Image (cartoon, rainbow, N blue to C red; front, side, top):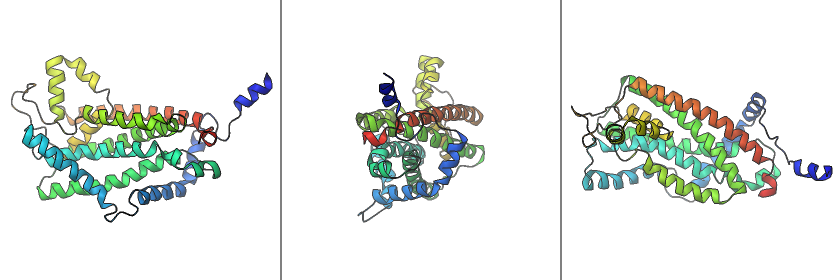
Length: 305
């Protein structure tokens, strides 16, 4: 009986629980491997490509062309300038979805490293987040170019929301990246479920339609309770922060109704900052929980790959 128990408890490497600060110091010691993995992810993504990293900049332009046709000419959504509004939310979404799409296969695709080389294995999904941050910077240049061409600038307190929203997004994304990366080693359906989930999540988040419309529809037509329930979607406050920082203006009518809403969420910058801070606190807690889960599963990676 004891021999059986010993066999069950044997793990190949990592302990079940991370050792806090000691593990963070170890991750810092392996920062060169992390940077090399990020470079590898970027190179592999655009290998044998004529345009290379320019494809990352063409991605938001393609979205812009399609959604401008649908929401400006077919559905006649009253958002001006639509390019700045769409790209401000799309920046955040592409960082989030791109990171998860890469990280869900990060451990599986690097099976040889996991089996032969010791390193903190969480660097694999974190490298996917880093590679998506490279794309984020390139796509930000597209937005800046549009803002320059349209002579559209945002200044003042609004811009203070941008670093808070970005930090919150990166931490929330890193938490989910660790989780899906570990789960996909044991349950390969995870990558397929993730694709379906991201598609639904995209339309559930106000990126291509006015966030103020959603607020008016839920808060004014159905009561504040449903609106606050919607805010449980962590990406919603993050997208609100990016939109307020980069698009800037609420564009509210004199009388706000569900049929005549603001373009952005009708709230103060302070309210949005508090909301983002709450999501940030929750994301930090989620990062710790999923980090523990990653450790719990990572000891068996070599056997399951």
